[in-house]
Image 1 (cartoon, rainbow, N blue to C red):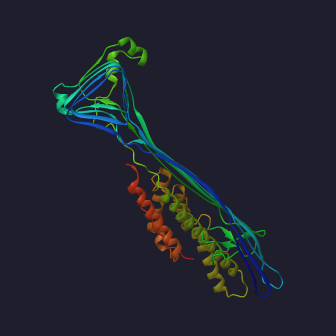
Image 2: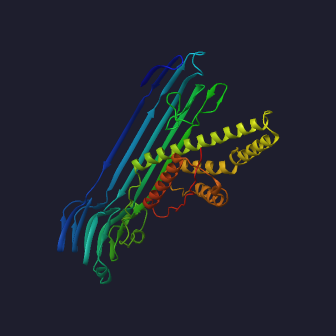
Length: 435
């Protein structure tokens, strides 16, 4: 909170109130597989069930004799994050007319950021992994694979050294996923005369950034709302598989009851390719990058809004000058020409305004997406096409916008490097903007 009292041709008062509220919750679970290794031959023998969950039995030759069920299950690392941050703020600036020239009153702002992430992926499969000596596995009960493998080297497959004998066989795959979503919303407003914007783009009467005075109608001034989003998702499948070799199911009736398949159908349904079954999914959520993207893009949106508003003021001033009886006919004609040009370039359907509008819409649609989506890709294509003919004529000097554009482009480039395979590459049109 800030409060100021001073004197400037009369009475002056300033006040600023701020508030914030939020929470952030995260949970991570990471598994490291247990490894049982034998340099030559590994023997597993049990009178009951044998469970390999988050475990690997490894040897040149693996022999297993299981008196109950054999359960092989891979485990997923998980990470979840959920946050919500809410702010507020009210600013007041008062002077007493007619002693004080001009007056202004309350402005208000509100902002809210939300982030969610959900990740789950197998990073190492559980299973029996034999070398060139192959595997010989006998199970009196059911053999169940959940994203698990019974594998061997190619030599064992070629020499027919692998065998699995089990009463019944069941198997399933594990779906890995990574997703995140985020939103940032800012709403500002005010009532009175000299209302401008803070560096973050919210309406204020207290120490506004020079040159950001907002337009007013009926005494009310409003900064345009800013709504940004970020999202991403990826997926993969960790598959169950058994290397090539003999699979013998000894209880066809029980197999039919468990899976609705005959013994031959159950054998045919399991993958025999154990070379590319793990399909680990890398995390794609980067909280710091998303928050930086929100900050950079909101500054871009607000700077563009201020810039377009200033161009509209120039057009209004030129239009008024064109009707000023104190000017010469040549001066009025020149003013009208300037007004027409500004409207053609920066009016609601002006070509230059379309460039900046398309840029801000594309940037705010997904601040981490690299503009790879179809609609955003179309926007970038339009910017590139128009940029060759029209953007090069812009004479823009704003350091703030140049920095925002460079940072946004840099963030998009970093997102592309870390994106999952298949993300589109995007080139940004560089704009130079003048206040």
